[in-house]
Structures are given as C-alpha cells and as structure tokens.
Length: 193
Image (tube, rainbow, N blue to C red; front, side):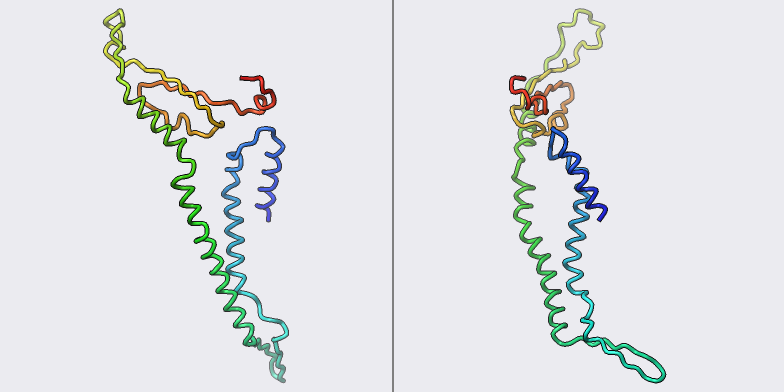
C-alpha cells in the first residue's frame, strides 16, 4: 500500500513541473512492476485458497473433548477447481496476449534512432583521416598523427529521441550533436530559435 502511495506522490509531484518527459517516470518503474506482480499473484493464488463457507463448519461436543470438523460441499470443490483453472488461464492469456506486442516493440518499433546513429558512425569512419603534415616545427608531437576531425550533426527530431553521444564515440573524431530545444522556455515563446 505504501509503494502505491509513493508512486502516486511521485507522479503528482512531477505533474506540477512544466517540463514533462517520459524518462522522469523511469525511477518508479521497478516499484510499479512490484505492484503489478503482487496483483497478478493475488489473482492466481487467492482464487484457489479461499476459506471454506462458514455454514459448512460443524462442531461436535463430547464429554471429553470438543472438536471442529470442517466439511466442504461438493459444489465448493468444483468451484475451487474452476477458480484455479481461471487463475492460470488468466496468466496464460496475459503472457500470450502480450507476446506479439513485446516482439514488435523489441525488434521493430523505434529502432530508427539507433540505426541512424550507427549509419552516421559508418559514414564518418568511411571518410579518409587527414594527416597533420602542415605543422611548421618538425619536433611537434602532432607530426604524423591523425588530426582530430570535427563533425556537426543536426537532429531535427523531438528532444531526447536519439541516444546521441552514447553511440557517437569515435576515436580521433570530435562529434558535435545539435538537437531541437524542447524546454518549457522554448515552448512558451515560439520566436526562440
């Protein structure tokens, strides 16, 4: 219950900010997974662990001892077995129903940002490296060393839609990435560039 309140408070607090991004929810994703797992277990486990109907409990009293005998009518056992079947059936439907979406999202959906960065890196690596031979003094440590090439890449896409520098590390190459500004200040004033 406390985890649920923590998640709600976190979302409400971040909703007050004028700058909203999906990645702000990532810190509470493990907590939400715990809540979802608990709910799924409640569906599966409690459906077949129901206590017997209190009206079926009989008490037998003798002069030496008192004993309580619990009897379950036949309809309860049938209902219990049916509940077990539905609980596991729900889990199977949940897994099988989500597998096509999982396959699509993991293999095809939004793979272009990473693919385009790989393509940019391959284009940069295909360029011949320049050798710095125009250094006036021959004792320079740069003599005969590859000069650091500089490339500017302009992404005209939504902010944080590409992994940028994490995929653009190339030895001997300086890459400057430029992205659109999506800050609240920029969205409030459309004349900003």
